[in-house]
Length: 109
Image (cartoon, rainbow, N blue to C red; front, top):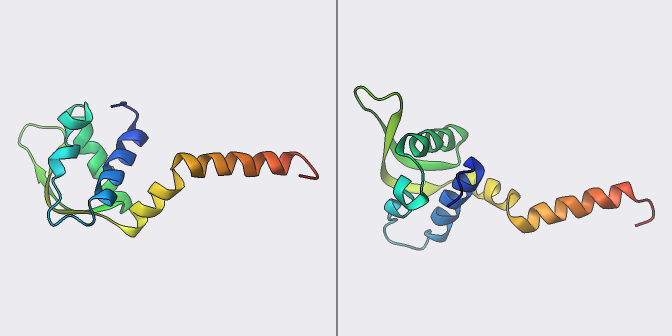
């Protein structure tokens, strides 16, 4: 897995969206080991996603001696805002935005 923060966010959101039909979401499938990143990075990214309202259903814990908080998945889920972020950052959406910009540059298209 790439270490790019946006790629990690998209991977977590995609997994949560794909899991909407599941009875129970296995958040271990997007833990730090599964994503190939450090635990502090994973925790900080989850914190950002919670702050932005992309995901919900995680409980924040402070670990004594750690410089970051950890999160326990109680009922993890993607939010409508997370779905919007996912849609806006799909490769097809990026291609559409580029084509739209090119059309604006070239008169008569």
